[in-house]
Structure formats: C-alpha cells, structure tokens
Length: 445
Image (cartoon, rainbow, N blue to C red; front, side, top):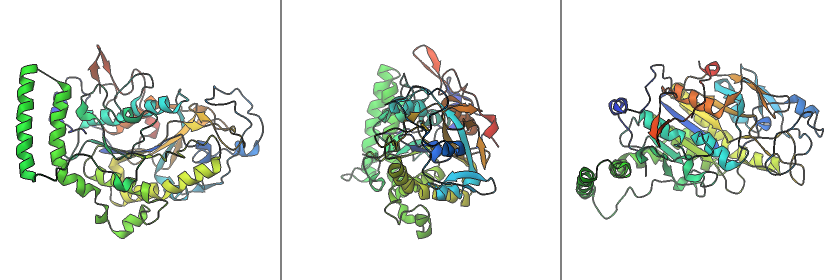
C-alpha cells in the first residue's frame, strides 16, 4: 500500500541513508508529470527562427528519431507573448500559467538519451532506463520520511499504468515501506481516486485495533524466529499506516472543505478542468499535511501529450485541461505562504522535434536531445530562464541540464546530498543519480 516514513532520529541511525543538508530550502515536492512528452517549442521555449524557416530543411544533422523520418521544419501554430516583470515569452496554450511566470524557473536545456516513452519515463522517475531502481519519490521518502505519521511520505495521484507503470513510483530494492501510495489511476476520474483497502465496514475502529494488534504480534514473533525480512517488516508498517490513515486520509480528500473561490481557482466548476484540478488541489492538501513527495499525472490514455500527428488539436485539448489548475496551484500555494518551502516541478519524459511528422505533416516526433521543464518555489530563482536549445529547439546547447542533474538539484533543495543518499544492494551502493549528476547552482536562490 504505502510507506510509513521515518522519524529524523531513525533516519540518522540508518547506516546507508544520506545526511541532511542544513541548507534545506523545501519541505516537500509536488511533481506535475505530463505523460507523453509536451512540445517545448510550442509551450515555454520560444523559437523565432523556427517561425521564419517554416517548411524548410533543418540546417544540421538530426539525431535518431523514434518512429519515422522527420520532414521539414514546422513552425509553432501558437503565438507567444512576453509576461510579467521577467518578460519571459510563453505560448498562448498556457495563458493562466503565463500570469505566474515571475514565479517560474524555466530550464530550457534539459536533455536525456532515450527516445522511447517507457525508457525515458523510467529515467525521469528513477534515474535509470535499463535497471529497476527506486523512484525519486521513494528516495525522498527514504531520506526524509513523512512529517505526518498518519499519511504516507509519498503519494501518487492517478498515475499512468503505461510507460513504466508501477515502476515509476516503486521503491524497487529499497524497503517496500518507501514505495509510493497510489490514489486511483489514469483510467479513472480523480473524483474516484482513493486508497484501497484501508476501511473495514464490518468492524468498529476498536475491534480493528484489537485485530491488528493480534496480527502484528504474530508477525513480530515470526520475525524473531526468521530474522530480518524487509518484505514482512514493510507489511507490518503498511498495516499500521493503513489503520492510521482511516482518520486522516478521508479528511485530506474532502475537497468540499475548501471555499467555493478556492475550488474555482483550480477549475473544479468547469468539466474541462475539474478532473486535473482535483489532482492539483489534493496535492496542495497533502503537501500542507506533511506528505514529502506528491506526484500528479496528466495522462489521458487516448491523447496524452504524444502528438505524432494532429498537434494543434491534441496540445490544445491537453493544455486546456491543465493550464488553469496548475496556475491555481501556484497561486494557492503562494497565497498561503507554502510556495517558499514547497518545490513544484513540471515536465514530461522528453520534448518534441522542431521538424514535422505524420501524414498531414502536423505532428512532432520524440526528442530527448533538448526540452523544457520548470520549477517553482522551494528555493529556486523565480522569473528566470536557465540554459537554452539551438535556434530550432533540437539540441540543448547552453548550460545543459541532464535528468541526473535535475534529480541532484531536487534532492539538494529538499536538504539531501545526492552523493550521500545511498542504499546498499547487490554488492554496491546505489543512489538516485547513479554515478553522475551535479547540483545546478545557477537556479538556486
């Protein structure tokens, strides 16, 4: 089910756990995962040269593409405007997020290596596309635990079951107690997102406590006989957490407790935005209750952000569903004084090509060579663009930021040293950043 989390004292006693960094700037993180690969040159990476050279050949070599030979350059069908004191250009796809641009730290120089959804998603979530590793939320849960003993330290809301599936929130070889706790999945409405099997309608709370105490005594006796058993120990913790969640989880999920103005800020009054708006509002409620890592996913199984064709229709539909809720989340966190210690991260597994694809030459292929992610709050510099891609958006060229660098920086902002946060497995020490990664000092306030 989920992770019980550790107290600070327990954490410091762990032989292989990382050491806390006294310069921690964020208490929790919210990861907004746009599954499928949003197009950076159509959202937050304005390319005037691409507009000028529409329908021309790319003037340099292209990397390997995923599905088909790419065609001519394809200008963005959307206009860009400059917003705020920072004057950052944002596509008309995101008019509401654009109003928050002075709070964003936009990294235009992200890059990876894997052009396939599954591998790239695993890389984004776990730091590896070739070996099953713990997800970043599990590493944070392992390193920091939860501030609320009645809720998991890592929650993923409506996650996709494709492109890595459960491995994207799994604890892998970390103790199972640090795995993400899923609420629903991408195939169902967020209104139905619940944690399964934490209620027993047949027994009173007192009777459940007695039943659980008896079960736990059997489990503890078994452990005394067999010795350490990570799976059983995790199950014991999960039983306890599930019992405690009976009181706090329903309260956290009760969005009717929010004012009408707050619900409208997230778009809950609009059928287009309501589904993702609920995810964003849940994320804020979990973060303010001490959950360390919350992941929300926009993953319409029919459309996603994977427009190999019909770019205009697909991206417009997707952006319409997420723009207002994301802006609502940023504004709400800021108005409550939560943004300064909550790290918000936005992005997908890769970007798209500036060249066209599809029968109608109206789509874009996968592109891990250069793409955009942005961060807000949690100790990052607001109102900046960091790094750059080339004039067309194909390759990251300036102040390149690898996925490992992003992970190292996220951990640093949460007060964890990515070099020290390790776990011994199969004869070696593993970490989220593997044997690479550096903290991107240029984006830290």
